Image (cartoon, rainbow over all chains, first blue to last red):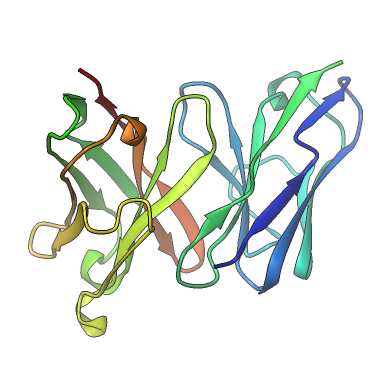
Amino acid sequence: DIQMTQSPSTLSASVGDGVTITCRASQSIDWLAWYQQKPGKAPKVLIYKASTLESGVPSRFSGSGSGTEFTLTISSLQPDDFATYYCHQYNSYMYSFGQGTKLEIK
Amino acid sequence: DVQLVESGGGLVQPGGSLRLSCAVSGFTFNDHFMDWVRQAPGKGLEWVGRTKNKASNYITEYAASVRGRFTISRDDSNDSLHLQMNSLKTEDTAVYYCVQYYYGAPYWGQGTLVTVSS
């Protein structure tokens, strides 16, 4: 099974800040997605195939990485961005998720 | 547009059974694998299992936590996915989502809440 280690678990930042969330896979993968989730809502796809921006998602969100190291970057935080973020590998067999990063207002 | 709509959630006692459904539209259902993912209250996301398509002999795969208790099936004639949950435990309480990976992009339903409690 592929384990996904996401960090940090909590991130405090201010509107206008740039932030980065990291996800590390226990083995090399090609298929990775990033989600934003707000309370009571389904996860929203931001990035898929590691770096492809989902249609309608603001360009301040970007994904990068390959192999076992991946990052989600938000270039200039907006009030609507404070939420929980998850990475998700869908490369093989038993898909798995990172533990989540809660992005809080400083 | 790809759309997935889950139904069938509710309150069930420990040891009981429940059947969830997922109605899909916007893509050729019978060509694709379909997954279930769940999220316990206040917790992270957990992959539950998958049904492959006819070309892959409808093979099903499950997480260890549900193997032997949950059964995934599909009805290609009605573009629907099902999750039969038996011997339910309190730790199965979660929102259950159906998920489809359409040309590499994940699509999620809105989820249906299953509460296992006496």
